[in-house]
Length: 151
Image 1 (cartoon, one colour):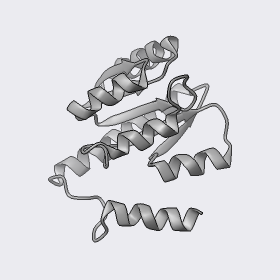
Image 2 (spheres, helix red, strand yellow):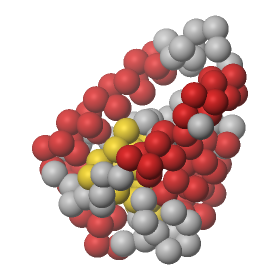
Image 3 (spheres, helix red, strand yellow):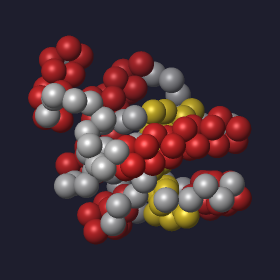
Image 4 (cartoon, one colour):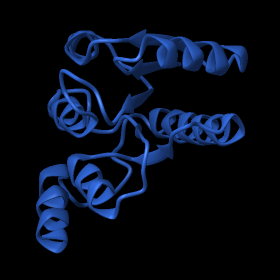
């Protein structure tokens, strides 16, 4: 399994790579530039994405939108790491396609627990032969319904 980390904070990327790498759950690849991460994701299949909310070039919510627009980005778990618990930001992230959230500074046991759970979910989805995890609804229809409810 492959985890990618996207943050323009080199120390954060290094710490996350080390912390998650020590658990031997998956290989971990870090990106300090959101555009480079998106380019990599366009050609590869990550199993989990951790993205920082506040970045200089592209914020995490915009990254999520662009990632979800990739042909293989629809069903990959995506966690937004943020420094505050503002409800408006979380709603925007959910509309963009975030799967989960982690509040910074990150708590290592919580980080590991979420990574383990999301990788298990991803593995189960892949084992089901790539079937959609929800039946009967096209992703665009679901997104439109979500958008109309949240606005």
